[in-house]
Image (cartoon, rainbow, N blue to C red; front, side):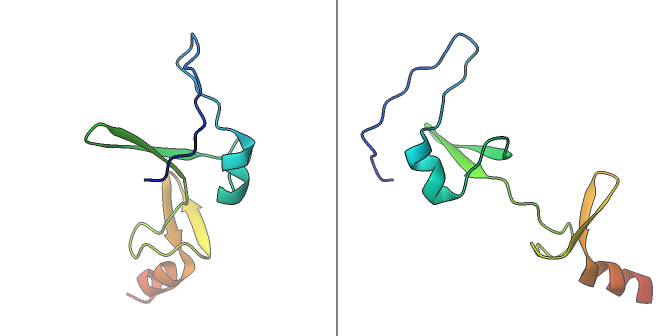
Length: 80
């Protein structure tokens, strides 16, 4: 892990602001969804990127209810 030298306090609501100097290079914009992971004693934030339920593809995604499926898998399912 790379140290940034940036320290932020947790506010009364349990929130921490991610500085723009970190968000810009990571392509994180206001209102973007973030995934939160725990690895031993570390909290890891990652920009959420939806993936196909079946193959893990990140391109040409369609929403079906609360599921996400790529067009390739949809076409494969229709053929079956």
